[in-house]
Amino acid sequence: MPDSGRHGGRAARSSREVCTSRANPPGRRARQTPSTAIKSTSSASESLIAQAHDRLPVRKTYKLYVGGQFPRSESGRSYVAKSPDGRVLANAVRASKKDLRDAVRVARKAFPDWDGRTAMNRGQILYRAAEMMEGRRAQFEAEVADTEGLEPDTARTVVGRAIDRWVWYAGWADKISQLLGTVNPVGAPYFNFTIPEATGVVGIVAPEASSLLGLVSRLAPVIVSGNAAVVLASETRPLPALSLAEVLATSDLPGGVVNILTGLRRELVPVLAGHMDVNALDAWGVAPELQAQIEDLAMENVKRVARPPRGAGAVDRFDWLDDRAAQRPEWIAQFLEMKTVWHPIGV
Image (cartoon, rainbow, N blue to C red; front, side, top):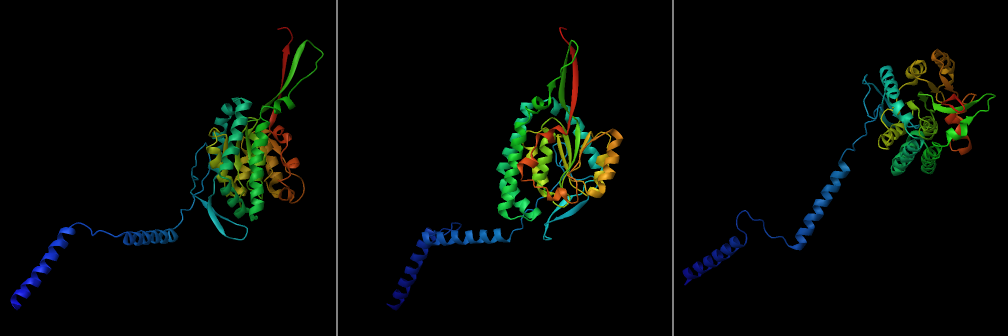
């Protein structure tokens, strides 16, 4: 009897093992209960969250903007862009003299096509730039706040005004010729017309302190009339200008119409002022100690020079938020040539 009991126990255990092996054959995972699955999912989510907190952010690489593309400097140099409180924001490209000459050549090549477009089309493209800036408004607000040391509310106002300034100048595209052009009375059987035309390639030394709004306020009146531009962005606050380049690259603006360089102004401003293929110079961002030098260099090919307000620190104190002072049709006229045409009556 005891032997049969032991055999009976062994048989029962063997039977249970067979049932277990049939329910979970080799190679098949054990079936999870709902509570086990929930715990597993929760653990996986916590692991992913931990990994997200541990990851390194992808830092943005800022480059030049030349000919509708984003090249690095041929010199391979860069410099550190810092916030007003000393924080390192990014490494900006330090453009060379050759980079500047390349940008002028590209601008000259792009000028005829841009100047030949209808005024309505140029206005549409400037308006498109405003649309693209509106879509990236949060990015511009963060960059302006960091680079200029502004409070978030002030940065929001500055970016909004920069977007509005594109719209304002876009509206002038097909009106400036009506304002400046005229039919002149002459004492002879002729028609005499005065017609404004774009100057050509304009070098812009952007305001140093107002990295975005000041730049837009000086760039928009240059290109709305058909000029091409080579821009030297703010040396100490270059990041908003380079983000603006990304907007222009996706706003239907032909490549080469606007070219934006970053670097040291003491190296680049004299080269831009003396370049023989630059027809006009916007000197609002030129340091007072360089003003006399760049005017002497500009005389070599009789450049037009748009001078900043007189007085020490006048540009830094200029209120770019004042629409009456900072958006003016006269700023468009600074970079226009007046062509006079005579035509015999009856011919």
